[in-house]
Amino acid sequence: MYYLSLLADISFSGYIAIYKFVPFVLLFYLWLLLVNWVHFDTKAVQTDTMKWVSIITVGGLLAMCLWLFVPVFIIGFSSYLLLMITTIMVYVIHRNSLVADFEKVLTLNHIKGLLSNESAKIEKAARGFSFVTANGNPVDIPDPKTKEAYGFKTACYLLDDAIWKRAEIIKITPGEEEYKVKYVIDGLRNDADPIETEEMPYLLYYLKQLADLDVEEKRKPQTGKFQTKKDGDKASWHITTAGSREGEHITIKKDVQFSLMSFAELGFESDQIEELKTLKDTPKGLFLIAGTKSSGLTSCHYTLLRNHDPFLNSINTLEKSPAGDVQSIIQNVYDPSEGMSYAERLKALIRRGPDIVGVFDCNDPETAKAACEASKKKLIYVSMESKTALKGLAQWIKMVGDKDDALESLIGLASSHLVRRLCEECKEEYIPNPGTLKKLSIAPERVKSLWRPGDIEYTRGGKPILCENCQGQGYKGRVGVYESFVINEEVRKELLAAKSIKEISASLKRNGMQFFQERLTQKISDGSTSINEMIRVLKVLNG
Ligand SMILES: [Zn+2]
Image (cartoon, rainbow, N blue to C red; front, side):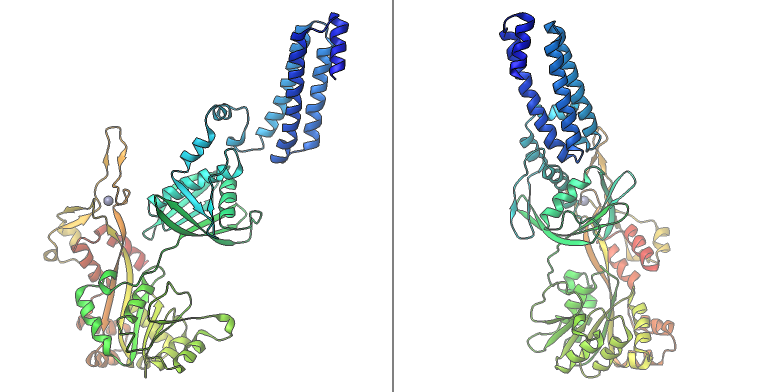
């Protein structure tokens, strides 16, 4: 090639001009670099390597021939440049059409990116965040312009935002134009910023690697774990990915450390606590606890069990998925692969002779009958899925199959609910409208003032000033609202005489049991929650 060029220069000009030779060598070298880049780039963007390397090679050769054979230097040189640039641009347009915006080359953003410090940019995008893999290995900030870097940036943005807003669960689902993101905050779904469709493959790639999942598996459900660290705060996350026809779905769930709470910490009122303490020395009987999923049912169940002295009593549980370890309680986890039904497993446990047994997730007649039978000699706490204590009791009678059998050993019942707690920093006191109180069956003399979420204030520019404590939600955390009642001999006689669940309800009420709405009213009048939250919860409960 050099010789050809030299020959050309000699033949057309008669001598080798240095000002022609140097640019020629330089451009030839650039052309070699270009062929090399196209070779690797075609693989990265998954296009035909052979075809494009050939086009660039032939384009370059033709350009050089033009330069060699056009006698006027400036015309030859210009033709060379023009042909080269055209060939390059044809390839660039083709490869840019195959990739995401931020992977495009020779665009305004790409050139701007080249002029700025990319490593510094990634560090800024990290927002002080770092990730730790499922195996406990810290992950370095990725190099700029890599697949990892793009996924890392989106992951940092997403998790930083979710942590700030106190999301317990992040759900990402494919939408028509972008991926929709929802946060579950204090048990409620909230919309979050969507993720661009083209950013998703990188986010998935990054998170799957982080959680030690198969990056190539896009259909089958996969689950893994990872951790985040920021400003000394650590959080552990469970991630689930699964594919559908529309795209991949991601669920990221925060690992919440279980801690056993007292009745007061859970949200029981003092009269309830006093009454429940009388159960401490009960030798036998059955206590029924109702609640829906994520209603605090499991925590309430553990606290009722720990109401008894674990040093004087052998306390056992039978559970399907324990929420955590409870000190001094023997927790038995049901394993279907052992070949026993839940009821059979319970019977086997009872035979071992514990004093007190907690039966979690008791939702089938066989287990209900076994628990009912055991309660003639032991103290049994049963939890089941139901919306209220009364509905739970009706369900219980049905499962046991005999009303008298079910009521004979019943020593008490409870139900658990969670409502959002008003933010202590921004809640506002107000004088309620008597009409509203009447509608909600709240006696006006019971409440002088109520509380509600504070109004959002705005800056002069119209930007909302969000409360730092609740991030503008108006609520922070949740408080338990419980129905509870301990049945004595007299009440039991009344219940046994009752002919319907309606009569049972009337009897319980007559004997002082406060139902959910009344208990919730207490939480409203002490400023723990608001009327709007009550309306929302009642709608869910009655829906
Ligand atoms: Zn607040």
